[in-house]
Amino acid sequence: MIHSMTLFLCGDVMTGRGIDQVLPHASNPVIFEPYMKSAQGYVELAEKATGAFPRPVEFAYIWGDALGELARVAPAARIINLETAITQSDEHLDKGINYRMNPANIPCIEAAGINCCCLANNHVLDWGYQGLLDTVDHLNRVHIKHAGAGHRVEEAQDPAILDVAMEARVIVFSLGDQTSGIPSGWAATREKPGVDLLTGLTPEAVLRIAERVKRVKRTGDVVVASLHWGGNWDFSISCEHRDFAHWLVDQAGVDLVYGHSSHHVKGIEVYRKKLILYGCGDFLDDYEGIGGYEEFRNDLGLMYFASIDPATGVLLSLRMTPTQIRHFRVCRASGSDARWLKDVMNREGRPLGTSVELAPDERLTLRF
Image 1 (cartoon, helix red, strand yellow):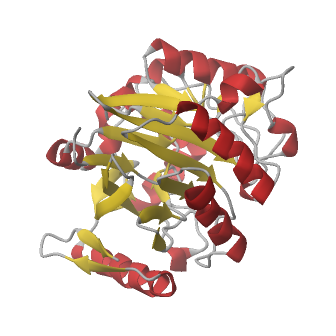
Image 2: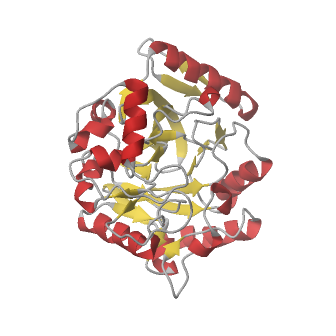
Protein backbone atom coordinates (compact mmCIF):
# COMPACT_ATOMS: atom_id res chain seq x y z
CA MET A 1 0.00 0.00 0.00
CA ILE A 2 1.33 3.42 -0.91
CA HIS A 3 1.59 5.86 2.00
CA SER A 4 0.82 9.07 0.11
CA MET A 5 -0.96 10.13 -3.05
CA THR A 6 -1.10 13.66 -4.41
CA LEU A 7 -4.19 14.99 -6.15
CA PHE A 8 -4.37 18.09 -8.33
CA LEU A 9 -7.53 20.18 -8.12
CA CYS A 10 -8.29 23.68 -9.32
CA GLY A 11 -11.05 26.21 -9.81
CA ASP A 12 -13.52 26.22 -12.67
CA VAL A 13 -12.16 25.45 -16.14
CA MET A 14 -14.20 27.17 -18.85
CA THR A 15 -12.79 26.29 -22.27
CA GLY A 16 -15.86 27.42 -24.19
CA ARG A 17 -16.99 30.72 -25.64
CA GLY A 18 -14.00 33.12 -25.93
CA ILE A 19 -11.34 30.49 -25.29
CA ASP A 20 -12.89 28.18 -27.87
CA GLN A 21 -12.61 31.02 -30.38
CA VAL A 22 -8.81 31.20 -30.11
CA LEU A 23 -8.24 27.44 -30.26
CA PRO A 24 -7.53 25.76 -33.63
CA HIS A 25 -11.17 24.80 -34.34
CA ALA A 26 -13.45 27.64 -33.31
CA SER A 27 -17.18 26.98 -33.02
CA ASN A 28 -19.78 29.12 -34.72
CA PRO A 29 -19.33 32.29 -32.60
CA VAL A 30 -23.06 33.10 -32.42
CA ILE A 31 -24.29 33.14 -28.81
CA PHE A 32 -27.57 34.19 -27.24
CA GLU A 33 -26.59 36.38 -24.32
CA PRO A 34 -28.21 39.69 -23.35
CA TYR A 35 -25.02 41.75 -23.76
CA MET A 36 -23.01 39.77 -26.31
CA LYS A 37 -24.11 38.14 -29.55
CA SER A 38 -20.75 36.72 -30.63
CA ALA A 39 -18.17 34.76 -28.64
CA GLN A 40 -15.57 36.76 -30.53
CA GLY A 41 -16.64 39.72 -28.43
CA TYR A 42 -14.97 38.15 -25.39
CA VAL A 43 -11.72 37.84 -27.32
CA GLU A 44 -11.93 41.51 -28.25
CA LEU A 45 -12.54 42.50 -24.61
CA ALA A 46 -9.50 40.52 -23.48
CA GLU A 47 -7.24 42.03 -26.13
CA LYS A 48 -8.48 45.52 -25.36
CA ALA A 49 -7.61 44.97 -21.68
CA THR A 50 -4.20 43.29 -21.95
CA GLY A 51 -3.09 43.51 -25.57
CA ALA A 52 -3.33 41.35 -28.66
CA PHE A 53 -2.11 37.77 -28.72
CA PRO A 54 -1.58 35.47 -31.71
CA ARG A 55 -4.31 33.06 -32.70
CA PRO A 56 -5.16 30.38 -33.26
CA VAL A 57 -3.16 29.11 -30.30
CA GLU A 58 -1.92 25.58 -29.79
CA PHE A 59 -4.01 23.24 -27.66
CA ALA A 60 -1.51 23.30 -24.77
CA TYR A 61 -1.28 27.10 -24.82
CA ILE A 62 -4.21 27.71 -22.46
CA TRP A 63 -2.53 25.81 -19.59
CA GLY A 64 0.59 27.95 -19.77
CA ASP A 65 2.76 27.69 -16.66
CA ALA A 66 0.43 25.08 -15.15
CA LEU A 67 2.01 22.43 -17.36
CA GLY A 68 5.40 22.92 -15.76
CA GLU A 69 3.88 22.75 -12.29
CA LEU A 70 2.02 19.56 -13.11
CA ALA A 71 5.23 18.00 -14.46
CA ARG A 72 7.14 19.10 -11.36
CA VAL A 73 4.64 17.69 -8.85
CA ALA A 74 3.49 14.70 -10.93
CA PRO A 75 0.15 14.22 -9.11
CA ALA A 76 -1.47 10.80 -9.14
CA ALA A 77 -4.75 12.28 -10.41
CA ARG A 78 -5.76 15.54 -12.10
CA ILE A 79 -9.35 16.59 -11.43
CA ILE A 80 -11.17 19.65 -12.77
CA ASN A 81 -14.67 21.11 -12.80
CA LEU A 82 -15.32 21.52 -16.53
CA GLU A 83 -17.85 24.27 -17.17
CA THR A 84 -18.62 24.03 -20.85
CA ALA A 85 -20.52 21.83 -23.27
CA ILE A 86 -18.36 19.98 -25.79
CA THR A 87 -20.69 20.05 -28.75
CA GLN A 88 -21.68 21.49 -32.11
CA SER A 89 -25.33 21.53 -31.07
CA ASP A 90 -27.27 24.73 -31.73
CA GLU A 91 -29.98 23.71 -29.24
CA HIS A 92 -29.16 26.47 -26.75
CA LEU A 93 -31.16 27.02 -23.59
CA ASP A 94 -32.48 30.48 -22.81
CA LYS A 95 -30.41 31.03 -19.66
CA GLY A 96 -28.30 34.03 -20.58
CA ILE A 97 -24.90 32.30 -20.87
CA ASN A 98 -23.70 30.01 -23.65
CA TYR A 99 -20.48 28.06 -23.06
CA ARG A 100 -19.64 25.74 -25.93
CA MET A 101 -16.39 24.21 -27.14
CA ASN A 102 -15.95 22.58 -30.52
CA PRO A 103 -15.35 18.82 -30.03
CA ALA A 104 -12.32 19.15 -32.31
CA ASN A 105 -10.72 21.25 -29.55
CA ILE A 106 -10.91 18.48 -26.94
CA PRO A 107 -7.13 17.93 -27.24
CA CYS A 108 -6.80 21.07 -25.11
CA ILE A 109 -8.11 19.05 -22.14
CA GLU A 110 -5.89 16.10 -23.01
CA ALA A 111 -2.88 18.45 -23.18
CA ALA A 112 -2.91 18.84 -19.39
CA GLY A 113 -3.34 15.13 -18.75
CA ILE A 114 -6.69 15.64 -17.05
CA ASN A 115 -7.99 12.38 -15.58
CA CYS A 116 -11.46 13.46 -14.49
CA CYS A 117 -13.97 16.17 -15.40
CA CYS A 118 -16.70 17.01 -12.91
CA LEU A 119 -19.85 17.95 -14.84
CA ALA A 120 -22.55 18.69 -12.25
CA ASN A 121 -22.51 22.44 -12.78
CA ASN A 122 -24.57 25.25 -14.28
CA HIS A 123 -22.98 25.31 -17.77
CA VAL A 124 -22.91 21.72 -19.01
CA LEU A 125 -26.46 22.10 -20.39
CA ASP A 126 -26.00 25.57 -21.90
CA TRP A 127 -26.51 24.01 -25.34
CA GLY A 128 -29.38 21.73 -24.44
CA TYR A 129 -29.69 18.05 -23.78
CA GLN A 130 -27.88 17.22 -27.01
CA GLY A 131 -24.99 19.38 -25.84
CA LEU A 132 -24.77 17.44 -22.59
CA LEU A 133 -24.95 14.06 -24.33
CA ASP A 134 -22.26 15.15 -26.79
CA THR A 135 -20.04 16.26 -23.88
CA VAL A 136 -20.29 12.86 -22.20
CA ASP A 137 -19.73 10.99 -25.46
CA HIS A 138 -16.70 13.05 -26.49
CA LEU A 139 -15.05 12.61 -23.09
CA ASN A 140 -15.66 8.88 -23.36
CA ARG A 141 -14.03 8.78 -26.79
CA VAL A 142 -10.77 10.21 -25.47
CA HIS A 143 -10.95 8.11 -22.29
CA ILE A 144 -11.27 11.01 -19.85
CA LYS A 145 -13.31 9.95 -16.84
CA HIS A 146 -16.25 12.11 -15.79
CA ALA A 147 -18.97 12.27 -13.16
CA GLY A 148 -22.07 14.28 -12.41
CA ALA A 149 -23.99 14.16 -15.69
CA GLY A 150 -25.35 11.52 -17.99
CA HIS A 151 -28.01 10.08 -20.27
CA ARG A 152 -30.11 9.03 -17.25
CA VAL A 153 -29.95 9.54 -13.49
CA GLU A 154 -28.06 6.30 -12.91
CA GLU A 155 -25.23 7.45 -15.17
CA ALA A 156 -25.25 10.96 -13.70
CA GLN A 157 -24.85 9.51 -10.21
CA ASP A 158 -22.07 7.09 -11.14
CA PRO A 159 -18.72 8.15 -9.68
CA ALA A 160 -15.56 8.38 -11.73
CA ILE A 161 -13.14 5.70 -10.56
CA LEU A 162 -9.49 6.50 -11.13
CA ASP A 163 -6.95 3.70 -10.69
CA VAL A 164 -3.82 5.45 -9.41
CA ALA A 165 -1.83 2.56 -7.88
CA MET A 166 -1.98 -1.19 -7.42
CA GLU A 167 -4.11 -0.93 -4.27
CA ALA A 168 -5.33 2.68 -4.37
CA ARG A 169 -8.08 4.45 -6.26
CA VAL A 170 -9.63 7.91 -6.34
CA ILE A 171 -13.43 7.88 -6.37
CA VAL A 172 -14.99 11.15 -7.57
CA PHE A 173 -18.65 12.02 -7.03
CA SER A 174 -19.84 15.21 -8.73
CA LEU A 175 -22.91 16.91 -7.28
CA GLY A 176 -24.61 20.22 -7.98
CA ASP A 177 -26.74 22.51 -5.85
CA GLN A 178 -29.35 24.97 -7.14
CA THR A 179 -27.68 27.83 -5.26
CA SER A 180 -24.94 27.78 -7.93
CA GLY A 181 -27.47 28.61 -10.64
CA ILE A 182 -28.35 25.10 -11.80
CA PRO A 183 -32.03 25.12 -12.83
CA SER A 184 -34.16 22.48 -11.08
CA GLY A 185 -35.19 21.15 -14.48
CA TRP A 186 -31.62 20.10 -15.20
CA ALA A 187 -31.79 17.19 -12.75
CA ALA A 188 -31.26 13.84 -14.44
CA THR A 189 -34.16 11.40 -14.10
CA ARG A 190 -34.92 7.87 -15.24
CA GLU A 191 -36.51 9.38 -18.34
CA LYS A 192 -34.18 12.23 -19.33
CA PRO A 193 -30.54 13.34 -19.31
CA GLY A 194 -29.23 15.83 -16.81
CA VAL A 195 -26.94 16.43 -13.86
CA ASP A 196 -26.70 14.91 -10.42
CA LEU A 197 -28.63 17.67 -8.64
CA LEU A 198 -29.04 17.77 -4.88
CA THR A 199 -32.53 18.47 -3.58
CA GLY A 200 -30.98 20.43 -0.72
CA LEU A 201 -28.02 20.41 1.64
CA THR A 202 -29.82 18.23 4.13
CA PRO A 203 -29.04 15.26 6.41
CA GLU A 204 -31.26 13.16 4.13
CA ALA A 205 -29.12 14.06 1.12
CA VAL A 206 -26.01 13.04 3.04
CA LEU A 207 -27.51 9.65 3.86
CA ARG A 208 -28.22 9.04 0.18
CA ILE A 209 -24.65 9.99 -0.70
CA ALA A 210 -23.37 7.71 2.08
CA GLU A 211 -25.20 4.77 0.53
CA ARG A 212 -23.57 5.46 -2.83
CA VAL A 213 -20.12 5.79 -1.28
CA LYS A 214 -20.55 2.57 0.68
CA ARG A 215 -21.31 0.63 -2.51
CA VAL A 216 -17.96 1.47 -4.10
CA LYS A 217 -15.45 2.48 -1.42
CA ARG A 218 -12.86 -0.04 -0.33
CA THR A 219 -9.62 0.07 1.61
CA GLY A 220 -7.12 2.34 -0.11
CA ASP A 221 -9.75 4.46 -1.84
CA VAL A 222 -9.81 8.24 -1.48
CA VAL A 223 -13.33 9.60 -1.99
CA VAL A 224 -13.69 13.12 -3.43
CA ALA A 225 -17.04 14.91 -3.32
CA SER A 226 -17.10 17.65 -5.97
CA LEU A 227 -19.75 20.23 -5.04
CA HIS A 228 -20.87 23.06 -7.31
CA TRP A 229 -22.62 25.27 -4.80
CA GLY A 230 -23.23 28.85 -3.71
CA GLY A 231 -23.00 32.21 -5.43
CA ASN A 232 -20.20 33.74 -7.46
CA TRP A 233 -19.09 36.68 -5.29
CA ASP A 234 -18.83 36.21 -1.53
CA PHE A 235 -15.93 35.26 0.70
CA SER A 236 -18.21 34.21 3.54
CA ILE A 237 -18.99 30.54 4.06
CA SER A 238 -22.49 29.73 5.25
CA CYS A 239 -23.26 27.54 8.23
CA GLU A 240 -25.26 25.38 5.81
CA HIS A 241 -22.19 24.71 3.67
CA ARG A 242 -19.98 23.98 6.68
CA ASP A 243 -22.53 21.62 8.19
CA PHE A 244 -22.99 19.75 4.92
CA ALA A 245 -19.24 19.40 4.37
CA HIS A 246 -18.79 18.12 7.94
CA TRP A 247 -21.65 15.63 7.50
CA LEU A 248 -20.05 14.31 4.32
CA VAL A 249 -16.89 13.57 6.30
CA ASP A 250 -18.63 12.24 9.40
CA GLN A 251 -21.39 10.20 7.83
CA ALA A 252 -20.72 9.60 4.14
CA GLY A 253 -17.09 8.44 4.10
CA VAL A 254 -15.90 11.42 2.05
CA ASP A 255 -12.18 12.17 2.36
CA LEU A 256 -11.98 15.45 0.44
CA VAL A 257 -14.66 18.06 -0.25
CA TYR A 258 -13.92 19.91 -3.50
CA GLY A 259 -16.17 22.96 -3.62
CA HIS A 260 -16.49 25.44 -6.47
CA SER A 261 -18.78 28.04 -8.07
CA SER A 262 -17.34 31.18 -6.50
CA HIS A 263 -15.30 33.16 -9.02
CA HIS A 264 -12.58 33.69 -6.40
CA VAL A 265 -10.75 31.51 -3.91
CA LYS A 266 -12.31 31.02 -0.48
CA GLY A 267 -11.10 29.87 2.92
CA ILE A 268 -9.90 26.32 3.54
CA GLU A 269 -10.79 24.03 6.42
CA VAL A 270 -9.29 20.79 7.67
CA TYR A 271 -12.01 18.96 9.56
CA ARG A 272 -11.12 15.75 11.39
CA LYS A 273 -7.93 15.73 9.32
CA LYS A 274 -9.91 15.82 6.04
CA LEU A 275 -9.53 18.64 3.51
CA ILE A 276 -12.48 20.94 2.71
CA LEU A 277 -12.09 23.39 -0.17
CA TYR A 278 -15.18 25.60 0.00
CA GLY A 279 -14.48 27.54 -3.18
CA CYS A 280 -11.57 27.19 -5.59
CA GLY A 281 -12.24 30.23 -7.75
CA ASP A 282 -11.75 30.40 -11.53
CA PHE A 283 -8.72 28.67 -12.96
CA LEU A 284 -9.28 29.32 -16.67
CA ASP A 285 -11.97 31.54 -18.16
CA ASP A 286 -12.65 34.28 -20.73
CA TYR A 287 -13.55 37.04 -18.23
CA GLU A 288 -10.44 39.08 -19.01
CA GLY A 289 -11.52 42.63 -19.72
CA ILE A 290 -14.95 42.30 -18.08
CA GLY A 291 -15.38 44.94 -15.40
CA GLY A 292 -16.96 44.62 -11.97
CA TYR A 293 -16.05 42.88 -8.70
CA GLU A 294 -12.37 43.82 -9.07
CA GLU A 295 -11.89 43.60 -5.30
CA PHE A 296 -12.32 39.81 -5.50
CA ARG A 297 -9.48 39.39 -8.06
CA ASN A 298 -11.11 36.59 -10.00
CA ASP A 299 -8.11 36.60 -12.34
CA LEU A 300 -6.08 35.00 -9.55
CA GLY A 301 -6.30 31.32 -8.69
CA LEU A 302 -4.52 28.43 -7.06
CA MET A 303 -3.28 25.03 -8.15
CA TYR A 304 -4.16 22.80 -5.20
CA PHE A 305 -1.82 19.84 -4.65
CA ALA A 306 -3.28 17.76 -1.81
CA SER A 307 -1.18 14.88 -0.47
CA ILE A 308 -3.36 12.28 1.25
CA ASP A 309 -2.78 9.01 3.06
CA PRO A 310 -4.94 6.57 1.05
CA ALA A 311 -5.22 4.16 3.97
CA THR A 312 -7.02 6.74 6.10
CA GLY A 313 -7.96 9.64 3.81
CA VAL A 314 -6.06 11.95 6.15
CA LEU A 315 -4.58 15.11 4.65
CA LEU A 316 -0.80 15.04 4.93
CA SER A 317 -0.09 18.37 3.25
CA LEU A 318 -1.58 20.94 0.93
CA ARG A 319 0.69 22.99 -1.30
CA MET A 320 -0.67 25.64 -3.62
CA THR A 321 0.78 27.45 -6.60
CA PRO A 322 -0.63 30.97 -7.20
CA THR A 323 -1.76 31.64 -10.77
CA GLN A 324 -3.19 34.42 -12.90
CA ILE A 325 -5.29 34.26 -16.07
CA ARG A 326 -3.75 36.45 -18.75
CA HIS A 327 -4.24 36.24 -22.51
CA PHE A 328 -6.56 33.27 -21.96
CA ARG A 329 -3.84 31.17 -20.35
CA VAL A 330 -2.71 30.17 -16.87
CA CYS A 331 0.38 32.09 -15.76
CA ARG A 332 2.35 32.07 -12.53
CA ALA A 333 1.14 34.94 -10.37
CA SER A 334 3.54 37.79 -9.63
CA GLY A 335 5.14 38.13 -6.23
CA SER A 336 2.74 40.88 -5.21
CA ASP A 337 -0.27 38.84 -6.33
CA ALA A 338 1.02 35.78 -4.48
CA ARG A 339 1.26 37.90 -1.34
CA TRP A 340 -2.28 39.18 -1.93
CA LEU A 341 -3.51 35.58 -2.10
CA LYS A 342 -1.58 34.74 1.05
CA ASP A 343 -3.24 37.58 2.94
CA VAL A 344 -6.70 36.62 1.70
CA MET A 345 -6.24 32.95 2.55
CA ASN A 346 -5.02 33.86 6.04
CA ARG A 347 -7.90 36.25 6.60
CA GLU A 348 -10.52 33.80 5.39
CA GLY A 349 -8.87 30.76 6.93
CA ARG A 350 -8.57 32.20 10.42
CA PRO A 351 -12.18 31.38 11.45
CA LEU A 352 -11.69 27.90 9.98
CA GLY A 353 -8.47 27.18 11.89
CA THR A 354 -6.07 27.35 8.95
CA SER A 355 -3.35 29.64 7.68
CA VAL A 356 -0.88 29.67 4.83
CA GLU A 357 2.82 30.38 4.54
CA LEU A 358 4.47 31.89 1.48
CA ALA A 359 7.78 30.26 0.57
CA PRO A 360 10.64 32.09 -1.18
CA ASP A 361 9.57 30.39 -4.42
CA GLU A 362 6.18 32.12 -4.02
CA ARG A 363 4.25 28.91 -3.45
CA LEU A 364 1.88 28.51 -0.52
CA THR A 365 1.68 25.81 2.14
CA LEU A 366 -1.38 25.25 4.34
CA ARG A 367 -0.90 25.17 8.10
CA PHE A 368 -3.58 23.40 10.11
